[in-house]
Length: 257
Image (spheres, rainbow, N blue to C red):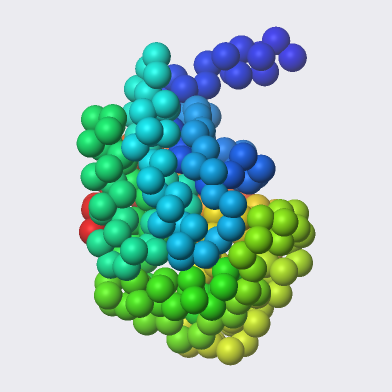
């Protein structure tokens, strides 16, 4: 018991990561599996619905909320933990957000979409089957965003959600995630991986079994973010039970696109 308390007090001895989160109720599964010694703090952006208009409006809060993450002590890295919020403006939008964060804080930054591009590049992925909870119009932007960087979407499965209540239910039930992944694999067996978008998409507890079942990597917004965060911080620890991605070497710095 005393040893556990001691370890809790030591959180952050390796790195402090500030996360910009759309909402407060999102379970941050990447924190559960992150290597020992990393502490995550969080600032909230107040997203009320997932539409292109609301996502662009949310971005107005990024500089001020990034500054809040630096009160008293600056983190080693700040990440926008929102997939759609970092691609909604099209190719290069993630870099615009990074510049906003770094300009407001002087802290190195990344985004979920940037992390995905780094992940796909490192794995040599060119063809994906994509799935997730968003509206079709949000996914249309995602497809164009990825196409610009040489990633072809062979198939799309989506639930058409935009209300926070829908995302809450989705977030707490692993079956829709499992079914989306299975349906994508059946529809596009030639895809290099299955990509399940959105930081609300929980894969912890099912990803190892699903990857074994379909015989290919399952990349989620969450494990791609953790992969790139650890890469940028130079932390080489293997992470288990979070997909094959997290068990590969990732020495070096996550390149910006």
